[in-house]
Image (spheres, rainbow, N blue to C red):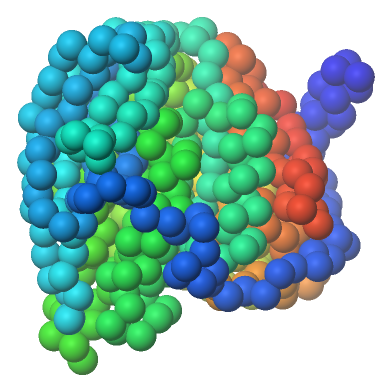
Length: 451
């Protein structure tokens, strides 16, 4: 069975190399209504106890995986900001102090938001941690990655545009039930709180934080912003973009010499992960442009052979929704992605699934050159995975005929996994949420671009 899978995967990979016609899936998803779950749903339940910590989540806290940032919210008063942790559940002998802040958004006042950087951890180790105090204290755990190294195996989950509908719940439960991912690459658009009335925006950030906790408290999520995190609302006096997001979610941006938490990078196992902001300036001379130029030159494929990029807007998509919205960033950065042989780029924004062949359009300019994308063995594979299940529903209309760069596309909800085997091979799977079941609908063996 495994041999059949590998052979089938190499057939798919050969399509990546020579640009054969792609597949438009005929599957029609019978979906639950695209409505947010009611605020009294059990997945949003507030933990028991006075001022009990909630909305707990962790992310990598340094460049190489020996630190985590633990974040949580206390609703009633600041309470303690320290984290107790250790390798034995019954002996949490080490403590680190964090920071706490709160904010207002329109007529909403947030709880007290804590962030605590825990450094100096050992690789390949399970840690238990406790936050809060007295009877309201809560216990969690996480596992650190193996040391950064050329043949280090690791498995990522990939989720985007999740939201908080029943379809969102199906996606997250399928990911959790598989037990396969060790960390999540999140491609943007978290709570979709901006789709609600102004007075409910903050409330829906709280419910989403409690919803995601069942995964995000136990394994690091690499965060990225989408358009629904911008929340620029001058009509109610909210003029600071990303305000809700930036108070609640932090990233290890300083460890990668970034000047903003909206773009950063980290190394984990044998992967170098670069996160870009589609909604921050990125043209020449801007901070994000300069940072990315330096970060790509810093990548050492003899240490981290796999190079992945996360952004929200897809650079290649044949869906009618948001068509060519990523074209400006493609024109600026695509030549670098080809030059440095990025293995894959994961995006969201379009509420459907699509995977490309290796194509590029770097020869085009306004005075001449080829006007269309062409097969390019040095180009990344582009994956659009904005299919987490949010309240805006599926984007079910595609361009017809299917462009040559498009390998597989389907308007269904789901998530993906990316399992790195060694420096040369990784296994990629996209899982469709099919009538409450988790179904592998697109798979391939990914060959490393450098090796």
